[in-house]
Image 1 (cartoon, rainbow, N blue to C red):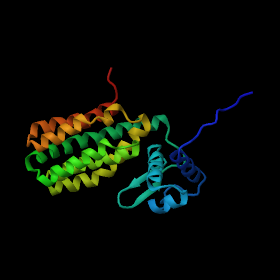
Image 2: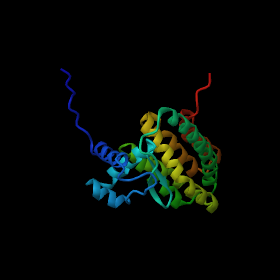
Image 3: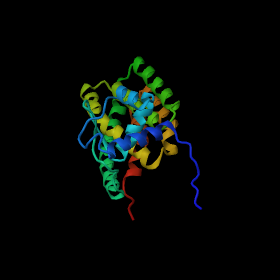
Image 4: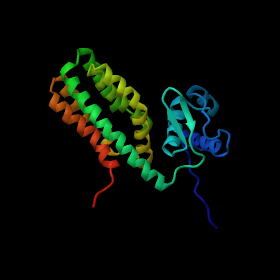
Amino acid sequence: MTVRAVRRTSLVEQAVTELRRLVEGGEWPVGSRLPGEVELSRLLGVGRSTSREAVRALIAAGQLHSRQGLGTFVASIAPVTDFDRQLRRAELAHIYEVRVALEVEAGRLAALRRTRADISALRDALAAREQARGAAELVDVDLEFHRAVVTAAHNPVLTDLFATFLDAVRDASTEMVADQGPSPEDHKHDAHAALVQAIEDSDPQAAMAATRHNVEHTLAQLRPERP
């Protein structure tokens, strides 16, 4: 006789299961738009953070796709295959390569142009990042931290460019976490604290070095291993 152990599931896992059932059962066909976050949370009977994390799990699985300013849409009835995931990881590496270029320059400019208000915002964002609980929250607060760095650069073109790029970075970060789980480096406080300190000290070289350390760790995980 084979007996399966009873396992208590979290609300997020239950929400993921229900969303997947609706997608795979055709309740929301490919191309259709999901209800907004508030309505989806009401339908699922869970909080907004729970429904948000469930949606991100299906985005990471390739079944949903987020479009900036438009909402979340059904991309595929079934999760992506391992081969498709390998191809997607190559695309994510391209996203992070652009992120390195944007944020290294943002760190340099922030060190030269930051104001007292910028430093206060960076300190608050750093504290929020340190207190993050769960993968979805860590992705959110980490991106808010980096948005604060870009804001401190006081370059409106760079700010707008980062804003248009943010959804792609969020999806890439969410997929990374869903694929591998948060790494110890994801929670590391020292490198981010070093970036804030470099900006506060008006040290552009140190700010660039800290930014590279923060972003290139993830990029190294995405790039294929070379023999």
